[in-house]
Length: 277
Image (cartoon, rainbow, N blue to C red; front, side):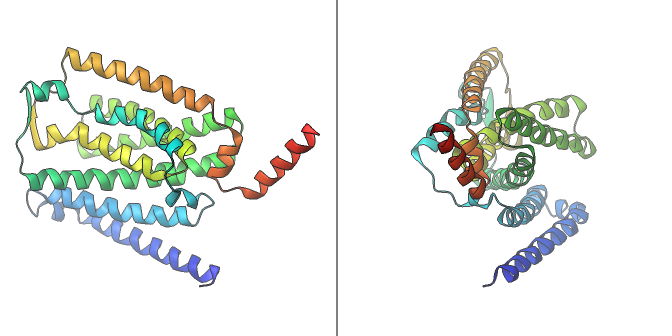
């Protein structure tokens, strides 16, 4: 298939998926009214379509290799400590002490898990796959450029969550969500640079959402207590130190590989060789 035909086909898929997503947005009230799982069905359908549209954009970009890069041991070792943040989002202490519970059916829990997967997939493809790589490509590969690229794209990711105010969320909870979305966005951006594989980010995002939401959405009870706050603070500080270490250690060659900028990479190798000579 010719490159131009392939590109036009991808653009057609993008346009159709975006159009259907917008139609479903206008039909939200009707979908939600279908029954107890209406809201989840709405989220799954719209976020899956949004994710597909963003995947098309990534395929059309220079960073398309992030969709099919093979997992490596070094990449996994960078990812695993960050996964502690996602897992610790579940209220283990209150749950196993009987103060928090999950009483929904297995079907409801699985449906909520699918919601988390679709939301994580959409948001990572949109904000790390599209926004972050686009900003990074424009900013440059110096350490300060990488830092600002992460900060800008993460700020956009956080600010977008202000839209939850229009869905009826309280201002306090939304401001808190903006803050931790900024931090999670920054962590996922660093993971993407170090792993060159966006599926690590999708997995982390989905698990984080599921771990933090399954009790309030599929059960109830107490989530936060003093031991949980202390544990969460310790885990957050340890992982934050690790992510900062990874950020400081990012090399221009890693950014080049992420953006698939082979020509500039070859030029840099030549220049470095000449300097050594």
